[in-house]
Amino acid sequence: MFVQTNTVSSVKKYIKEKLENHFSDSEIKMMSNEFLKKRLKLSHSDLIASSDILVTESDLLYFRSCVKRLLSEEPFQHIVGTTFFYGLEFKVDTRALIPRPETEELVDWIVSDYKEQSNLRIVDLCTGSGCVAISLKSILNDASIEAIDYSLDALGLAKENSNYTNLTVQFRHLDVLIEDAFSPKLFIEESYDCWVSNPPYIPNSDKAKMSRNVLDFEPEMALFVSDTEPLIFYSKIAKDALRFLKSKGHLYFEIHEDLAKEVVELLSELDYTSIEVKKDLQGKDRMVKAVKR
Image 1: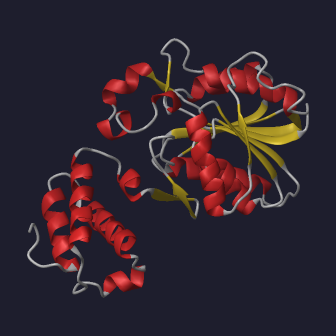
Image 2: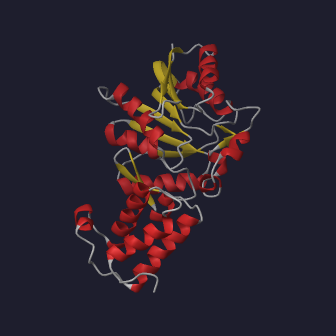
């Protein structure tokens, strides 16, 4: 037995002792509580009074497995199986990137710009888990939203999340980088109010700075671009958006913090107007908005 007693309090003590050299106290408390709530099906209020609750041998093996997986640098969200994003719970696994808080800020920017409008047509390119498209649908509920990705694995997860949240989005399998990706048979020119994308934008040279919990557990194709063409997705998407956005339609991107100037120059050269860069909560240039003339 690796705990003193089969109680929740002993489980918490065990998790803290095993993780205290690897995570902060606040991180350990949060993760411990989430493991307990998920496994024992406890509400937050139940958890507060749970110290003397008895757990089974099977439960103990589950908690030990969670600790081992954390120590192997597997993301906490993958172990739990879900994460919260913009007030919704999303399934997460190795098929797509884990939704990040900075991407919530991108969603919030779009919502604040469009919350007074109705019957919008929106496209989310490189949708991954579907978190952007589905979160937008949760607020802009009468909008028609399409979500595009090249990865069939990511689209499978995004569709699961659409069902899981009971929010309907139209999904398309498409490689946005190919020349004739946006066929007029599928996409009507000058018909969209908004295009948004959080594309791959990390140069391959940045891999050396990144932690194992990202490199070993999240899809490389959703993260990295060539060092010689770091703006490849922005360039192609921005050019295509000119055909399909309405006059004064909006284009939004999440961006690499070091490439804001280059993205702004690209959009300016394509004759977009009202180009605006916004910082994330860490003060890093993280998103940009542009308007079609």
